[in-house]
Amino acid sequence: MKSLYKTIGLLFLFSAIFTACKKEPKSENIVFPVNFYVHQLKVKSGVRLFTKDGEVTDPIKISKFAGHKDFFNIKDSLVVQPEFLFSITSLDSARFTIGNYNNKYTYEIKGNKFLFSSAQVFPLPENSPELNDKLFKYQSVINLGMYQVQRPIQLAYGDFKAVELPMQIYYIARRTESSYHITNGFSNNEINESFLTTLKNQDTLAYRTYHLICKAQ
Image (cartoon, rainbow, N blue to C red; front, side, top):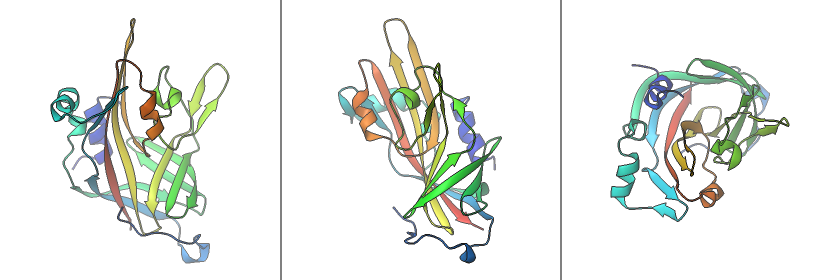
């Protein structure tokens, strides 16, 4: 079977059930590295469509805008051959493998929430919703004067035995009098609900939420 992330990437043409961790983990109880493998891709919501007037619930309008986009039509509860996704290498560091990228991360734990921050930063394109309107709830944008960069954040819920990563697949179209801008992609994060109130005339956002079910092995 093709890599799950490679399959999702090709569809773009570029690109809660879990065990709560109530206490801070103790290093003597964990043998590093802890390697996590994706076992299942679970659909958590249908396609949600938003304009400046709020959420569009008419299934005909949703289908007209998003129905022909294959990346919104990934099969529900897709069980995959276990595929390596990331490794927690110490109490404060990890490494993610996404597509052809193998990036170092640091992380912090808050209750049952893991927040992984990339050690590498990436430039943000002009008019990017991640930059201007904070599409995702957890992000790290760094202002470098003439331009800004983003330190990718990976979000997971669970513990050192099993986690779920909320994966948002999104497509946003923005039209002005002089341009038409499209941004799409996916992120292991949560949608920032306040972003939905910032949509302007002729802005349209569609997204669908999946969960990556990962187990340590």
